[in-house]
Length: 196
Image (cartoon, rainbow, N blue to C red; front, side, top):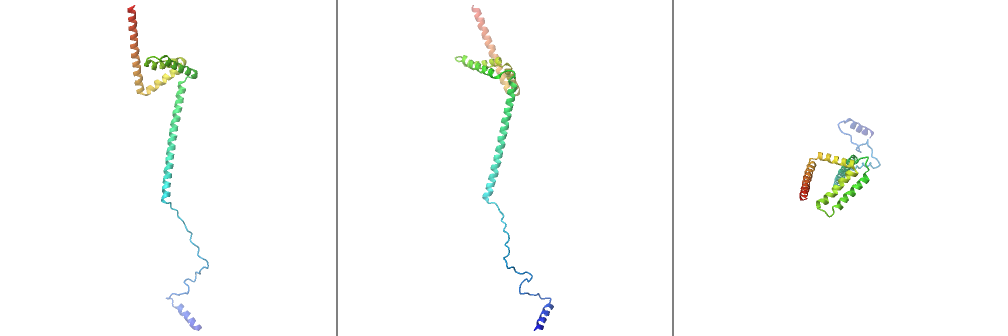
């Protein structure tokens, strides 16, 4: 029997064209007694539609807040510039050698006195007398400051032609009114001298 087995083995080795068949599929790989490791599960998070909408809304709100903040900063910067210009203008107008507080108080009292004096008078007199008393007292109590105010008004008039036109028209009306009043006074004096 041994010979037969050897013969069978030699016969099998001799036939190279036939594949060798084993009882197990792959004798080189032995089966493990343990379970095979499970492959790692990789979760790829993709945002839901609600999350996408919330993200877009949040981005828009943040952008609107930044724009609003920039506008507020712009307004604040403009306001600061206006304050600085006003401070500079006031420093230019107020004379350093004049005391502003008592002089401004005297000017205010003079303006109020103008309203009291013209209380029961003509409407034009009621409007003109406080202005006249205020301007006259300002030239008396704060002459340099009043002169500086007049210069600043003339500077603004030179920058704006509309203000210049208004000033010239008011000056013409005032000079015409003064001439008419002077002529009426002269006529009254002449009539008064003739009647004597």
